[in-house]
Image (cartoon, rainbow, N blue to C red; front, top):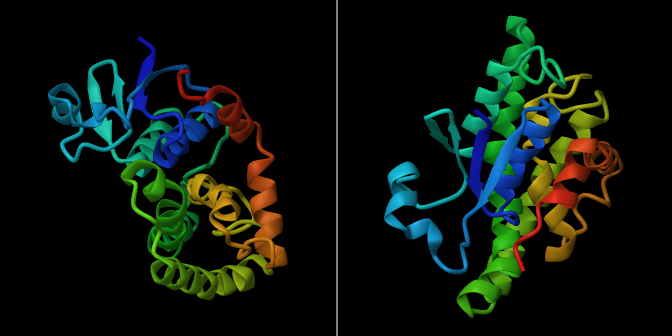
Length: 216
C-alpha cells in the first residue's frame, strides 16, 4: 500500500515531510487538506491529528503526525533506500545529528517560521496586518542565532558535520521563505548562504517545487 500524506502543498511542515520522502524514494500520495476552508478542523482530520494541524501520514493504517517525527520514521523504516545516513548509526555521529536537530527546532524554526507567518501568512488568512515590532524581534533573534550558524558552517559542510542529515533538510521550507518575508539574514552570511544553496539545489526540493502546488 502506498503511503498517504495528508497536508497542504504550501505548508512548510508538509513540504518538510515531502522532501524526505523524495530523498528516500518512498512512493506516496498527497491528499490536500484545504486550510483556507478549515478542513483541518473537520472531525475526520482531528481524529488523526488532534491538534488540527498538518501534516499527518497513513502508512498502511499506521497514523503519525508531527513532521520531524514522520521524517525520522521514514529514515528508520527505509535506511538503505534513497539517500543514506540521514540519521547516522554511529553513537557519536547520531548524537551530533540530534544536537543539530535540536538547534534547528530551538534556534531557527521559531524565528524563521514566526517571521514568515507574521509577514506572509497572517495578513492573507486572518486579514490582520503584520506587527512590525514582532517582525523586528523575530529577525533580531534569527540574525543572532545565524551568526552562530555561520561559525559552525565555517568549519564543516553541514550542521552536524560533513555529511547531510535530516537536521539540515528540516531547515529548507522556512529558509526559502525568509527573503519573501524581508530578511537578508541568510544571504549576508557566506557560509550559511553556501549551505542553504547546497540544500535547495537538491533534487528532492526541486521536486517539491514542481509537484506541490495547490489545486486551482
